[in-house]
Amino acid sequence: MKNRKMLLIIILVVFALIFIDFLKYSSLKVDNQGSVVTTLDSKVKETNKKYDINEIITFEWDYIYVFEPYTSKDEIVNVIGINYYTKTYLLHRFFKGDSGLHDDNHKKIIFVKSGRVVHEENYDFRKMDFNKNLYDKSKVSFITLKDSTYFME
Picture 1 (cartoon, rainbow, N blue to C red):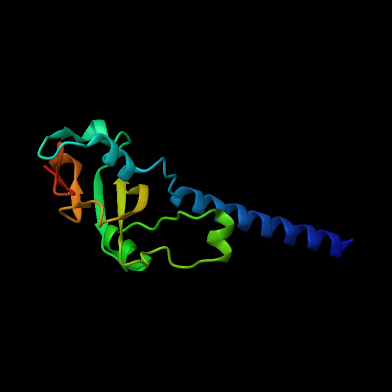
Picture 2: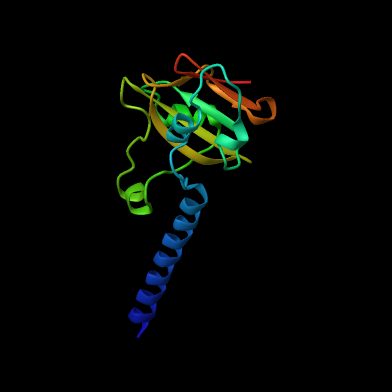
């Protein structure tokens, strides 16, 4: 009888720890909604024309960070000061590999809102790029395309 109670207590503790770990993971999980780069590419057509940034990027954000090729996840977290996950819970838990950049031709763009990563994606900077590595929404209103580079002002 004591063995069954002890086993039941151990099982309950294990499930409680898994549940707490999952809650922590869920609070840091990025739920990417479509491709911002694809949206920019489809809506910003004319060069040297100013577009309202709020009509292009429709979700809420405070800052945009752009990272160079081969930037590790640790470097990204160090710069933005926020840990985040893009993998499913099981992949995160059992295959912890770095989700940094591992390609000569890709950069990573990350959107942050209220101290939380709200969107993250990689893009091919040979097709288009941004002129800076950090944007503050309170200081930018427009986006302009010039020679395959987006300028926010």
